[in-house]
Length: 68
Image (cartoon, rainbow, N blue to C red; front, side, top):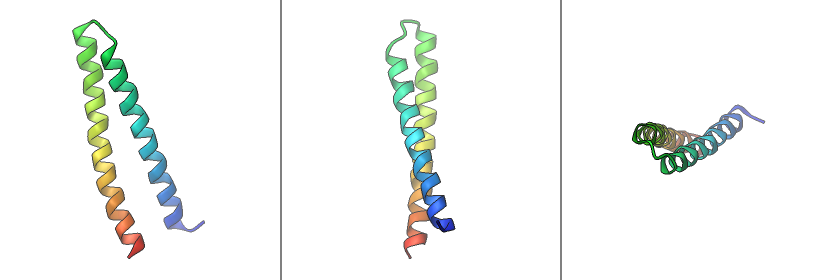
């Protein structure tokens, strides 16, 4: 496996992990009755969404460079 394929695999794996984290934190934010816990969970979900957006942008740039 060449270096680009390894990087692509690692990026795709990270993307899947981030998506699972967002889903989990979003689900948790719907459960608690305690407002502080709900806000804490929503904050984590938002942070992971931001990381996912950054990742997707970086992955798009990488993918463009590899296929060029």
